[in-house]
Amino acid sequence: MTLSEYIIAQGRGGLTRLAEQLGTSKGYLHDLCNDPNRRPSIELAKKIELATGGKVTALGLLGLESPKKIEAA
Image 1: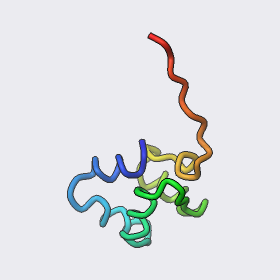
Image 2 (image 1 turned 45 degrees about the vertical axis):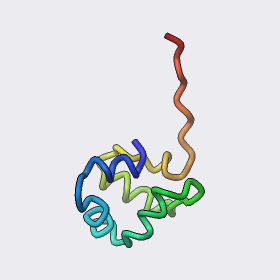
Image 3 (image 1 turned 180 degrees about the vertical axis):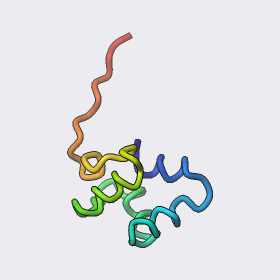
C-alpha cells in the first residue's frame, strides 16, 4: 500500500492526524504522496511504517522494495 492510499483510506483528517503523530507537516506528507522522486529520511520512513502498522513499508517509501511479480493467469 502506498502512503497516499493509506491516507485516503483513513478518511477525512487522515493526513492531519498522521502528520501530528509523526511530528511532521501536512505539506511534507503531501509532497511524499504526490512527488514520485521525493523520499523521506530513513528515520521518518521507519516511523511511517510503525504508525501505519506496517501497511506502508519503509522499504517501499525509500524505493528499495522489489517490484511484485505479475503472474500470468
